[in-house]
Length: 503
Image 1 (spheres, rainbow, N blue to C red):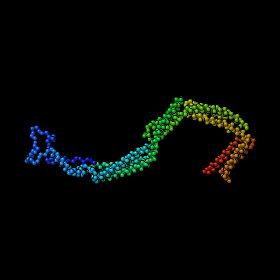
Image 2 (image 1 turned 30 degrees about the horizontal axis):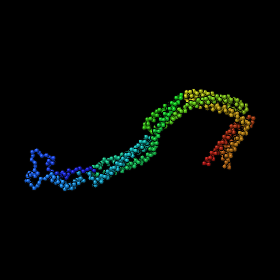
Image 3 (image 1 turned 90 degrees about the vertical axis):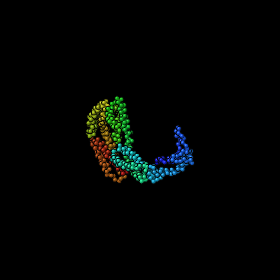
Image 4 (image 1 turned 90 degrees about the horizontal axis):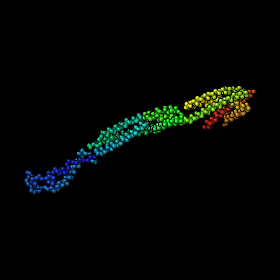
């Protein structure tokens, strides 16, 4: 409310306009007499009027008393005249009461409520835009794109509601002194409607935000992983570089590891450029790959001295083994001679090429050992490892062939001395399988009985090969071994079926 300005008609002004009540100006009033002038008489005659001997001239004390009296008498009347002017016009507001002021207060309350709703909606929209930006920076799925589209549509409704509120505020000046009750009522209605629309859009915004939970959670998780993943990649590259420096200081070149580490340079550059340029998912994937490769390089660099020592050890070991096999291969010929002398050709025919093949394998192994030594000296570690694996395979084959000749002679000697031991071993396996097949049954299952019956017949047939002047002991041994293998398959089948049925 503005203060009421001073009225032009104050009591003192009115008093000054009353004839005959002006204070006389004398020396006491600040007006000095002119030099040489005659003093004015107190009851000087007024021109046009005769002298009034009965009226004494008013003195200064009399004048002041009259002024005070008139002021006290006229003051209530002047206040009564001034109050209607103060409260009913003069371009000022009503200080209290009145229908216009009540409507003004209601409109102002509606304006404040609409402003609060507008601020709340604007804050929520800003927060939600941050969430949408977070999602789009991480997720490019169809669900994320649909969320962006829905947010843009919601933004248009927010702009519409905000525009209605702003127009309502601009259309009504609630601070006008001459605001009418009807205008205040219209302002209250429009502002209340704007506030309701803002609230409805805010509810839509809240529902939309609640639906973004899974997408936002996934995006925030990836963003939370981003910085640690990039840092792990950088630390892994640093560790790999330090490991290579340590290896080189020991006299090992590690050229292949250095080349692999150099290939990660462009990837590190992209990591330093940031996810803003290359995208969060791509940066996460790149950081993971760089960290994995750098860790592999570091591990291999740390193991390189040990690997070099292992290759040296294998070179010595395989060279010694090749020499031992050369000696053993020379012993195959006496074994073959005994087999030829004591057993039929079927018992040793397949071993005829063992000495020659063993010698060839040993020569190949020694050649590969030289190549492996050259690769190790050149620090071509993968080549050295591959060549040593080839040498080992050649020596294993030679060892098996040389051992087969001696093993053949031993087994043939045993069966020639006592074939019944091999027969009993095979019969026991058949009977054990038959008992298992009959467990819990009165008649065997044909699927089990048939192969077991065939095993019995094969064993009987193998026994007949032992008759005659030059029995084929090797055929007998291989046949009994085949019979035992077929029986073992039947036993395994029975146990699997019963195990399945019990479950």
